[in-house]
Image (tube, rainbow, N blue to C red; front, side, top):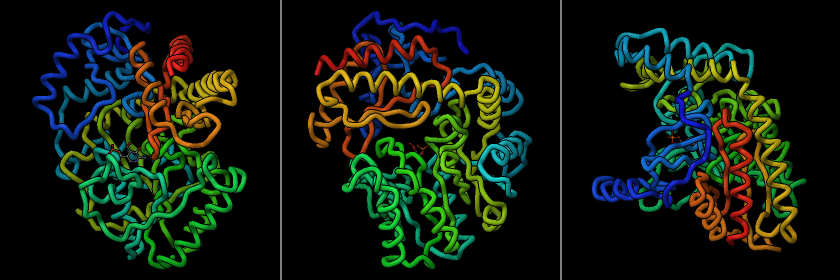
Length: 446
Ligand SMILES: Cc1ncc(COP(=O)(O)O)c(C=O)c1O
């Protein structure tokens, strides 16, 4: 890890003067469509801290959106990627291959659920992995339809915009979208009309009915779901939902794809979130946490499905770049050595304990409607007190109050009313608690 002291330090207003100056240059040079949560420009980052150009040290509850699980400068990632950088930056795996790519695929075969024969293909971004999972599933089944879920998020390319549920900001004005994409209900326990306890059975029955009646199971190539829905609001589908959908897929020869791009690689306290209910997906898409901050993604799955696409049908100039592969091997080494699954489970214990305490202190829970998530993928859903009406304004106000005190938090959710916490799994417990203290104080600013 870089030697940044693991201490919060607020020296200036947030953002500070140097960040403000850079922001002016940015506004002139960078397209407006690329947003930022907090216009604080980073100088270095590591462990649970991001240091900005003004010397402020922010506590990181975002991990660059669930990426730097091992920290943003993990020793093994830096060591392996630097060595690779000095050896060669690129040959293109499709021209002259190299060992790192093969080794990452071997590790993916070991780490992903199921003991069947598996193969992988590597890409750059999460969206690209999801696109390729669809290509592979279509090639294997000879079918075209793809089923996705309410509140799902799968990326910003044309096909993945079609797969993504939320219109604004992801889709507005960017259509037409790819055809043969169908959306069905998900078991969102907190908002399920007949209660969380019925959500698993009822939502899966509804989803299966819609697939059967409106699409025809025999036309469906793939069902794609995030085992914990990320951008949609850290929704854990109610128990029973995922097994029912996976079972239906199996029965009808549909490729079941777990999109673990946000939830994978120790984030939820298991290597992959689908393990929680013993799901063995046919294909699994990974990215984000896989490579300690370097751009890498993968589709991993049953060898016979992965081999359905003809030679030359999959790939891309940079897919499985050697430096990114070296980073991935360093990140995986760190996850094993530091038992980051165990660390994620401890983060859940601390965070949920503190968040439940905060809720208990507010009359009838106040704005905290729900505390949920697993491992270091934890969220609170904010509502108008005494109702379930989403309160996006309170969510934005809380985030702003946290930012001003040097705690980086992110928001998400279909209704923009979820405050999500994704600390690096290597964050110290003192920083974790200090961040939660800041959040607790922020409630009094509402
Ligand atoms: C579940 C899921 N799928 C796909 C993506 C898209 O990944 P990327 O932004 O790397 O294209 C994301 C990104 O947030 C995601 O959370």
